[in-house]
Amino acid sequence: MRILLSNDDGFDAPGMTVLKNIAAALSDEVIVVAPAKEQSGASRSLTLHDPLRLNKHSDTEYSVEGTPTDCVMMALNYLFKDSPPDLILSGVNRGGNLGEDVLYSGTVAAASEGTLLGVPSIAISQCQNEAGVFFWETAEELAPDIIRKLLEMTWGEGTLMNINFPPVPTDQVEGVVVTRQGKRDLSNLSIDARVDARGRDYFWLGYRPSFGDPSEGDDLHAVSTGRVSVTPLNLNLTATGLLDDLRQKLA
Image (cartoon, rainbow, N blue to C red):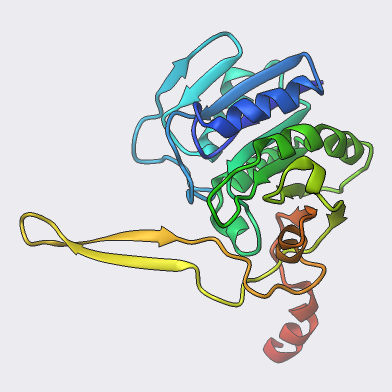
């Protein structure tokens, strides 16, 4: 099995080291194409108005001065088009990708692009606790077995997997559960307004991850109760339940 690794935290991020160890437990054939610098929050953006620059670190490892989506496109359509991967792993993200995070996440975006291009893809994230501590070993030790089980299934066209590991040591994980995408009951965005040395206003957007009061069965609830969350996500965003009512209304 040939595995492509990418992320949104950057080529040198600690989560990439963890992801390489996860991939090594699954295959001897691993390739890396990741952003040269952090691209958190890039979602599925493309670099269309600037040149893409490619940095070769070895015959199997490259960094791209662009977004996670750029990286997957470059890997599948240019760098390894004659020997494409059988699986794409994106992560391990520094922090959870839960609820509405999946709409902003570059980590999920890399997996989404892989899915769009026909390659089974999995986004992997390690949540942090309230003290900002990451138990990277939790993802590293538990992910390989979960991935093996997922690969025994047929997911269906346009579906990717989103795995979030709870912010606890491995021996405190309460199990693995299949979840739906949740929604937080509060806003986590903070806008810090400042003034520069020339008197011009500028702003820093800050994001403070929290679980809120999630519903049982969703990804937020699973991780907040010490369990690994596995969520199947669809690329097709059509609200199918509304189609018939719309047809009648607009006939």
